[in-house]
Image (cartoon, rainbow, N blue to C red; front, top):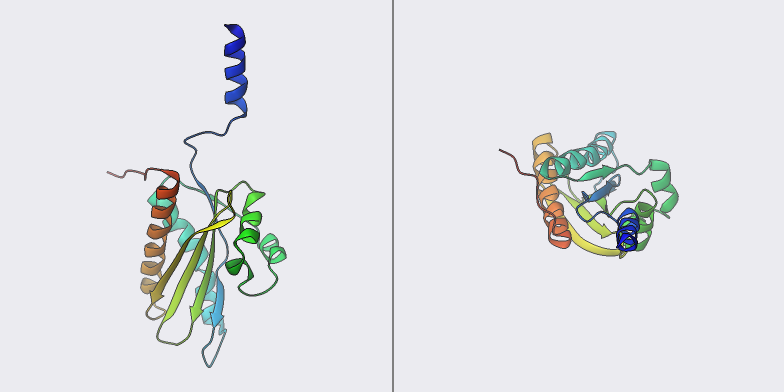
Length: 173
C-alpha cells in the first residue's frame, strides 16, 4: 500500500498541473506599411503600442499568464519581415524555451491612411501549428479605434484558447 502511495506521489510531482493558467507570449507587432509615406515615426509608435495593449486586454479577460520574450530573442529568431508570422514552427520554438503554451504573432498591415488591418496568428507551442488566424480592420489611427480593435482581437484569441484548452474565463461581479 505504501508503494502505491509513493508511486502516486512521484507521478504527481513530475506531472504537469491540469488546471494551470494558459501561458501566452505576445510578440512585438510588425508594421507592414504600403502607403505612399511608409514607416512614419507616428505609425511606428502606434504599432509598437499594440503589444502592451493586447497583453493588458488578454489579462483582463481571464486567468492567463503573460510571458515576455525579449526583443533580442525575437530578432534572433526571425530572418526578415513577416518571417515569424509565416513560419509557425519557428514562432513555437521561440515560445518553447520560456515555457509558453501559446504565441501570438502580430502584424499591423497598412495599405491606406484611412484603414489598416491588425492581423494575428495564434500558434500552439506544443504542436507548432497555427491555432487561429485573426484579422481585425481598423478604420483610422485614433487611440479609441486601436483599443476597440485590440479588445476584439483579445476576445477572439481567448475564445480560441478556451475552446482548445477547455479553460473557463475569469468571472467578474
